[in-house]
Image 1: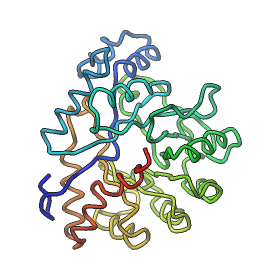
Image 2: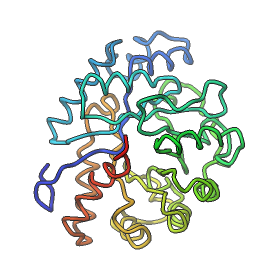
Image 3: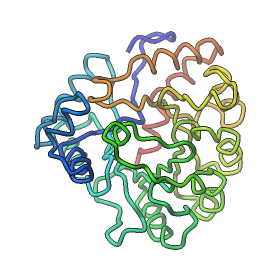
Image 4: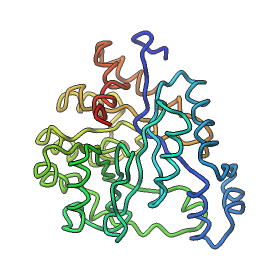
Length: 296
């Protein structure tokens, strides 16, 4: 892809795979059919075969010159969809999946590059003893742990009139500190710069070299702290350096349709303005993600 540093390979560390099963789950909660749900949301219903959606994703990445992307299965139990995407388009995707570790069926699925934990959504502490076996299993299998912290809102739930009884008591990145120290072989990803807990996320990353930050979304939380994106990047670079920053967009093919090039452009402009080197840009926009997952 063409960037302010010239042609660079770009990989996205944060995109959502809104599969047919994802909409089925929303439909069941809303008491509607999947067709009614997508109609209410103003988007198309993906094919039941996730391979079809995977090929659409690959075409979208091609259109923008993106080399590779993480795809997140965005409801628990949808690992099969992102794993099917991997099979359909070898080399284009990495499979992440949302897991509820306090559910009886919680496990690290074969073929996943990361499991995604949402403590506020599922109302548990990352330090809960029930979470420990899943973290230990992921660490032993070189599977990363994506831990959502900070503000969490799910727009599709609001649009469908579904409640979001999330609990921000479980959103503070500081809770991850003891866990990351206890599992030095594990790799933890905090998305959205901590989504309103930038200071706390940086404290944990400073103390734990196995903690990474992803840059994804519009980062609207910045209004809570009066920061702009360049200031955020400057603070993160001063604490972690360039090697633990993972570029992401929070894209999906439904809301809005397509890979979010505006997020890429804003982040590239902010980092270019800070004068980072081409080598550091190469790391942030894809190299760090490859290194994080070099064993799987």
